[in-house]
Structure formats: C-alpha cells, structure tokens
Length: 180
Image (tube, rainbow, N blue to C red; front, side, top):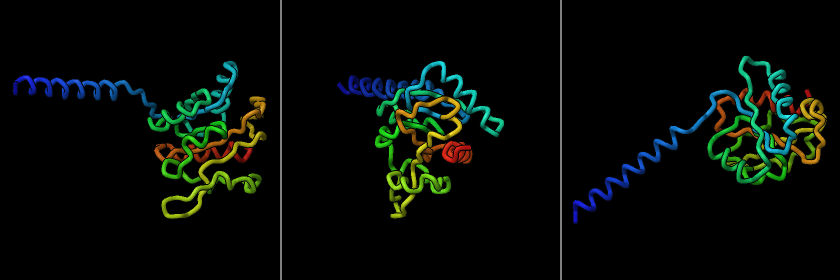
C-alpha cells in the first residue's frame, strides 16, 4: 500500500514539474520595447502605425507594436504576464488595471492642456501621495492625426511598473500626449 502511494506522489510531482517546464519554456517574451494598443483598428492601418511609430522613435531599437481587441480579459492577461512596456487603451477599459501598485506615476509628463481633466486619472499610492497614473491621448496627437483616427473612443496611455524600458516609455508617451 505504501509503495502504491509513493508512486502516486512521485508521478504527481513529475507531472507538475513537467508542466512548469513546458509553460515556462513556451513563453515568447520579447526583449525589445513593446507598445500594446487595445482598440479596434483596420488591418490596413496597423502597418501604417508600426511604420509611424518606428519613424518617430529616436533610439536604435525598433518598437514592436501589437494590436489587441478592446477586451478587459485580454488586458488583464497581458498585464499579469508582464507584457507591454507602454499600453494605449480605450478609456473604458482602464478600470480593469487602474491601480497604483502596478503602474508608474506619470506626473512628469502632465500636459498643461489636460490639467483640468486629469483628476479622474489620479490615485493615492501606498504612502498616501496623489499621482497621475494614466494620461489621455489628445486627438491632436501627431500619431492620431496621421492615422485619421475618428476619435470614437478616447485613448489613454499607461506605463506598467514591470517595464524594463521605462525611459523609452516615458519619452514615447510624452510625445503622444504633448502633440509632438
């Protein structure tokens, strides 16, 4: 009887270890900068956005742009997976990940034109200090203008704390917010 239990536990442990190795080995994480956009964009516009973003980027590294449908579940999955260095999403979807624990403060990027409407994007951090954690992308943004974005859904930008490209994310978001 004991021998049977031993083999049962040994097989459960072996299968568990195999599953862990399988799932961690199948991850295809990019080491480069990732921009995630959660909104509906026509297919012909996607390549145009990729080209525009890379033309606007000043660094030598290219920016991988990924488009996702505007779904709460997909945003949460990507966020939990620590994917995406800069995330642009429809304002309505922000509630799914709007938490100071997982986002970087964006106070240094604040645009004077948006300062009146910025209160809805502020939260208290762990120490009780109020910071801005999301910024609206104005329709006058060069990226949105170049794409003839119809503005049916307001887009906001966030930067997750887990990003390894914090300076690049701040720079790109600042460019989008300040209409450069």
